[in-house]
Length: 101
Image (cartoon, rainbow, N blue to C red; front, side):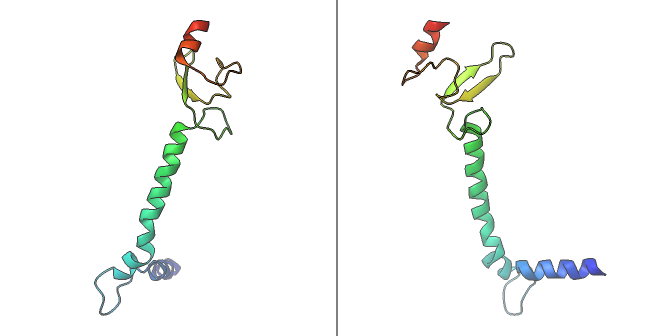
């Protein structure tokens, strides 16, 4: 019995209950449902950040440089600070990496 009361409370709070004189689910789409697009945008931005940030744990920088692990062949995205071929120069270039190998 408590489950039906809980579901009714959820439907009431989200605006899913139909009100007289309004189109079906009007309260949901004008209230709680209108926030779904904002949650989707924030989730998309977080996914893009997660894809492009440095592979080192707790590093918040964007990983602009690819590093291929010689043992496994896996390609990692790393920032200038954590890239193993960066020895302190300001710029990390492809010609500089290939010259040292």
